[in-house]
Image: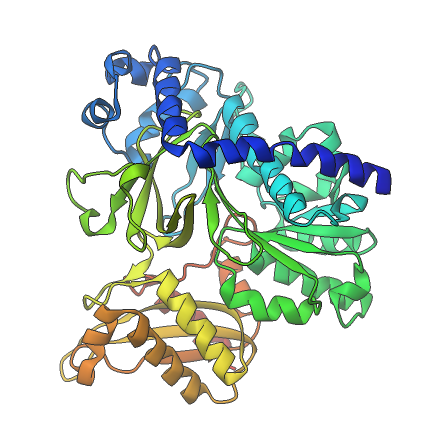
Length: 511
């Protein structure tokens, strides 16, 4: 295994030169990429409609091609799902990543071309390994297995006559992995692609607890569920008692900060590393490339052309987009992508903030639909997570899960934010926790602070502390267990709050 580790480490490091190339020439790489995408798709149905052949620069691209949401592209995607080709992209599209979305219960089917698989998703996975072994040349990652906590959706045919297939993006990726990649991952393909989440967690725990796991890839929330079950099975105090060679957790989909303390209690090692990625059904976008910062390098040669909408223009009928050469550090932007799977000027619903322009590094700040702005406070997920982390640190708490929304102004009463929080370790003083949370939000969000001034528009937040397992039961009740399903964090309505609190009340799940 040591020999294999040395060979794979050497192979992975060879990609670093290509990464350095797009870091050095970001605008040239992106412009060439746009030209290539338009040229390849010029004679597709979508390309003909929007005159791709006549587009010579990005200004013409902006003028000819509209910014779209999933609903706008769905008529074209529906044709692809029915087997029609050359609609959005010239090569055959047979795979679709199913996503329920976080704020919309309707299923989305994102086309995944062969180019998107090879030149985006898999390339991102290989680059992740390249960056990691380049940063940690002493790594022994390849002496053991990578535990992949994938989605909860089997790969399915649309109908018995269809040649097209769908599943969670992780299921699609796992199903199409080359044989050598299958050899170094765990659990078995049969377990990894199970769609009954509770049975899957149990079988995954039983199977992997006897493996030599050196790395884990997954969503923090569901990884915690698995790790806690493994500790029960093995009657162990720490995951290191089960997997002594574990060295890195690669995470994405939701922010890691609120869970960091809990992971460190499950894996009590100063040598344990945590690496953030930004990948989704639509593509692989960013990788944490520095050992001393959680900022992610924006990956510019994966067949994705980037544009950004300043958030102060979000919601406008014809918002102005800016290119990479026009973005500013510290501003909030919604991401618009055009890809080698046929997504053209597509709103993926995420917002980012640039932390560096040389090279281009980002942090995810939230979702365009995930915020609370019932009183003009413009509270985004990044604010919430930073404030929660501060409150946990100052009160000795460990967070498990949370959601929040507004309690609206009423006759004779002021509005406030209502939070439902599940702790792994409760704060030593919930009132103090609430105070610190509120103070930190006021410190980092001037709009929130203005609305909280003398309680004129907003009064002190109200926190419902619920017992452990509450969010798991709620997600199960909603049919949203596992994989790509994420707990809705912030909502500008009370639908999630009321549904959760009603369940809590009915089952007396208050801590």
